[in-house]
Every structure is written in C-alpha cells, then in structure tokens.
Image 1 (cartoon, rainbow, N blue to C red):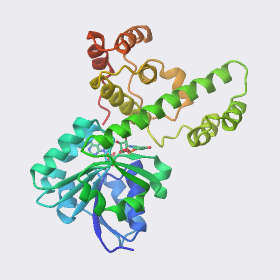
Image 2 (image 1 turned 135 degrees about the horizontal axis):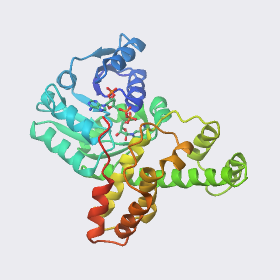
Image 3 (image 1 turned 180 degrees about the horizontal axis):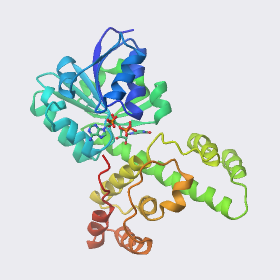
Image 4 (image 1 turned 90 degrees about the vertical axis):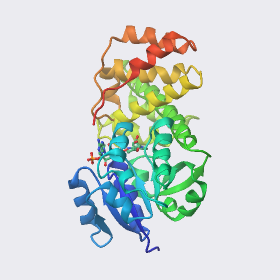
Length: 324
Ligand code: NAP
C-alpha cells in the first residue's frame, strides 16, 4: 500500500474505474471533472481518500503526477488550454500522464506544451474497456518519458495487468489506434454476421455457439454477443469514440501512404448505414449520417487505391461533427 497523492482529471466511463483502482491501492487522489456531479459521486464512495479540486490546474498544482482521461481531441485541447486548465498548473517537474485515445499529433502537441513549461509527459492510452478499467485489468500502451514510465509502475500496476513502453510520444498512440482499428473491423463483421443470421432465418444464438467453438473465438464476441441478442445496447465504449478511433487510424494509415480498405469500410459503414448496424452494436449518440452510401463508397474506393487526390477528399469527408 502507498500513501502517495496523485491527481486525476476526467472521471468518465474509464476514468472513474481507473481512479477507484488507485484508491484501492492505497493512494489519495485529488480529482477534477467537468460535471461536478461525477466528482461529487466519486468522492462519496471514498470520502477520506478523495479531494475535489476547483480546477484541472489546481489538481496539477497539488500533485507531482496527474493522470488525464478525457474523451476526444477537442475535449483534451479544451481542458489543457482553458483558464484553470491542465497547462496552467504545470511547472518544473510536474508529471502529466495522458491516457486518452487521440491522434499522434494531438499527443505530441500536449507533450510539447507540458515540456515547454518544465513538466514531464507520458502518453499512456489503454486497451480495455469499462470492465477492465474497473477491475485493474487495462493494458497501457506508453510513449514519451521513459524514467517517468518506470517511476509510476505502482500506479500502472494498480490500474492494469500489463504496461508497454514503445519509445517516443506518438508510438503508444499509434499502437492504440491499430488495436482499435482491428477491434472496429471485427465488431462490424460480427454485427453483420449476426444481422445476416437473424435476417435469413438462422438463429443468431447458434452463431455465437459456432463462433465460440472455432479459431476466431474471442472474449469480445463472448461478452457482446449475448448482450446484442438481448437488445442490451448500454454503452461501455460509446460508438462515437469507436468512430473517432477508426477515423484516426485511417488518417494515420493515409499519413504512412497505406490503403486500408477493410478498416475504411466499417468506418464508412458506421456513418452511412447506421440503421443496419446500430441495432446490433452498443451505441450512443452516433454522429449524423451526412451523405448517401453510394457516394461515400465511391470516395472510399478512390481513397483505398493508394495515394492520390481521392485520399485527401475522402479524409476530409470523414471528419465527424464535434459532439462535446
Ligand atoms: P467519456 O466517459 O465519454 O468521457 C471522459 C471524460 O471526458 C469525462 O470526464 C468528460 O466530462 C470529459 N469531457 C468530455 N468533453 C469534455 C469537455 N469539452 N471539457 C471537459 N471535459 C470533457 O469517455 P471514456 O469512455 O471514459 O473514454 C475516455 C478516453 O479513453 C477516450 O479517448 C476513449 O477513446 C478512450 N478509451 C475508452 C474506452 C471505453 O471502453 N470507454 C476504452 C479504451 C479507451 P463530463 O463527465 O463532464 O462529461
């Protein structure tokens, strides 16, 4: 057990469970969340271990190490840069560990901003969802300050089952996007399989059994399949975040000149055919489908052929309206 105090900014679906794991490991927390109802509820679960700060800057100022778990690139930018934001609290030696899933360029900007104020920075996006966050079973995919990574093994071990260090800031994020890109394509194929079964007179419950006995059995199908059958679409990983990650992965692929048709197709499908996919997926607040499927399919096909004018046009069309 430790008597350290650490900061935590962002008590959402993931942050709440992660912060609870830190408390279970004996740490004291100073927290801030945009919606005060969440920080109040969090403090009520462990009043002696939690202090609510009046701003993200106050969290950082009070702690040597602050974990951030915010939702989107826009949210992160806002909470870092606003009055009373993360950056306002950074001074020499302050350590920021950012666990959100962003684009590499976002992480690099956050890192540069923290370093410019004399602070230290580790990117630490996570693999795992609400359950693993609550149970300390996340996988941390880190990049940046390696001595900082090594010095926070207690905290990472409290929240996760394994932590990787890949190198410079951006490398952890790239790995995270690859992981979520694979997951997104799997979930789309799985959803379409369930849909095809149900629509063609086969029993989708039997599909789950068949899949589970074969080489593509996996914990995700096992977890989500029965929920999908039961019509339980309560979000653990909101679809808008899944879509954000697919978009970021496709953009990353474009940056490396790689066409990724399988990953691009679900991304397009999420925007163009939500009515056929959503009933089979756990959803929340899907961005509106702005264009017809055929038109987007054509643009997608162009983009997947490789470099060329179609790619830029395609990527610009993947931009999702801001939700928060
Ligand atoms: P979430 O519950 O939607 O939100 C996380 C936090 O972001 C909340 O504290 C929320 O504050 C805050 N926030 C959002 N917009 C904000 C803004 N404009 N200003 C200030 N705060 C803002 O997200 P999550 O599911 O925990 O995910 C957090 C990150 O982890 C995301 O990058 C996601 O892609 C990644 N991730 C998620 C999962 C998953 O299964 N959920 C798994 C792996 C990685 P409020 O409470 O005030 O809304």
